[in-house]
Image 1 (cartoon, rainbow, N blue to C red):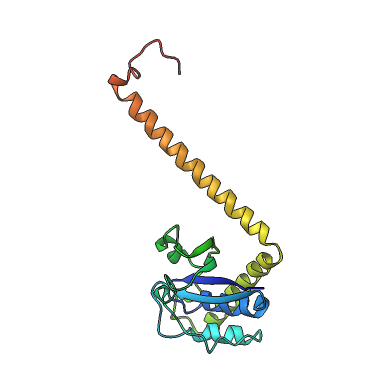
Image 2: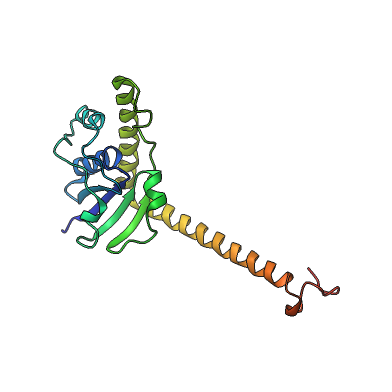
Length: 188
């Protein structure tokens, strides 16, 4: 059986996406090939990410930050999972060579870099655990995540259609040549 490929995307590829890559490899490496990338990769994985993962028996110290360009156009992926809000904002809705895109947005544990190391590590632990819970749920019941994605896309489609309909109505009401807007006998 061919393994499905998953690419975790973040902004810097130094924390959340790296932890997600290590977690997927650990929990389902027999079914998935895990990768990670960043839109603006840093030079190294954050030390708190490495330590937080080591605490649960997963060594990500051999991984390194990579840019999205390393993969796009060179590999195909069954799944693209975006794990940070900034990457989601900057990411195109469709990617060539990507099957399904999920957004699993987790808080940035690196915020407030001037925190003491122990406090920073505690944030990384919390995010690591959130990623693991979300991943386990997806691995146990992938249809739930797909249903959530379909519902989100349908909601976006309805909102887009409603906005277009409002624009069309506004244009029609304001246009006397349309025969509407100035008709005193027109029913609302």
